[in-house]
Image 1 (cartoon, rainbow over the protein chains, first blue to last red):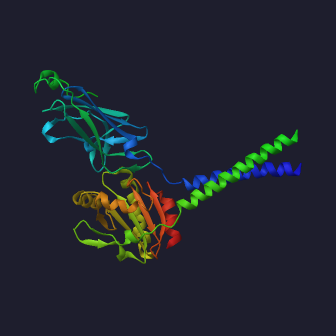
Image 2 (cartoon, rainbow over the protein chains, first blue to last red; image 1 turned 120 degrees about the horizontal axis):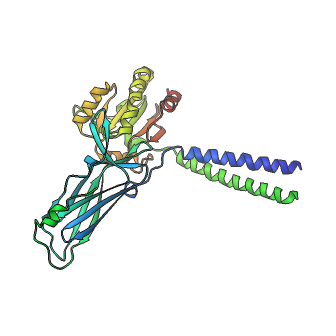
Image 3 (cartoon, rainbow over the protein chains, first blue to last red; image 1 turned 90 degrees about the vertical axis):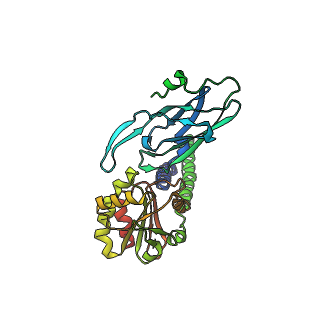
Length: 166
Length: 173
C-alpha cells in the first residue's frame, strides 16, 4: 500500500518535473524556416502569363513593399503589375504599412518568352511572425518551361487585361 | 486489484524519468556555453561611418541586440534598452545595437528614440555570426548577453520581456 502510494507520487512528480524541464528548454521561440512559412509557387496560365503565389502560414505575414519579382534570363522581360492591396497598419515610424496574411496572388507577364526555353521566376519577400520575430529577405525561385508552340504576339489585349487579382 | 494500478503508476513514473532525462539533456544541450569570440572580434561602422569594434566593450556586461527599423518587434523592445542603458550604464551595462538596415534609416530612428547606446550598421552576412549562438535563421530581434569576461550568459531570439531582461543583466552586474 505504501509502495503503491509512493509509486503514484513518484509518477506525478517526475511527469511534472519532466514537463517543466522540457518547457524550460523550449523557452525560446522556435520559428520555422521562412521558405516553409512563406511558400512561393508559380505556374504558366498561358504562353506569357504567370500566376505567382505566396501561401503564408497562420501566424506569419509578409510586407507588401518588400515583395519583388524578377525573371531570368532578363531578356524574357517581366511586367509586374501593382501588387494587391494588403492589410493596412499605421506604423509610427514608417506610416502606412501594408501586410499580407494567408496568401497573395500576382499575375506576371512575360514580354519576350521563347518557346521551348525555360524561365526562372525569382521572388523576393520579407516577413515576420506573430511570435515577435522578423526574417531577413529571402529569394525563392521557380523554373517554368515555356512550351513549344505558338506565342501570342506581345501586347495582346487578353494578356494586358489579366494584370492581377487578389 | 492493486497490481495493475501499481504497474501503471510505475510505467508512468518510468516514462516520466525518461522524459525528464530527455528534457534535461535538451535543456543542457541548449545551454552549452557558446563562443562569443567571433562576435567580440566584429568591427562594424556606426551611423557616422566610423568603424567600431565590439571588443572595446570587454569588461562590461555587454548586450548585443540585432535589430532593424523594418522589424516591428525589434522597435517595440528598444525603449526598454534605452531605459536600461540610462539606469544601469553607470553600473557597467553596455548595450550595442547592430542594425541590419540602411544607415540613414537607422540614424533617423535613433534620433526619434533618443537612442543612448551605439547603433552599428550591418549586412545580413554579419547576422550569420549569430547562427552558432542560436540564431540559425538569422531572424530579428536577436540578443546576446555577455558577462564581464566575454562569456555568453544568455541568447534570445525574439523580444526580451523587460522583467526578464532586468533579471538577466541584474545577475551579471
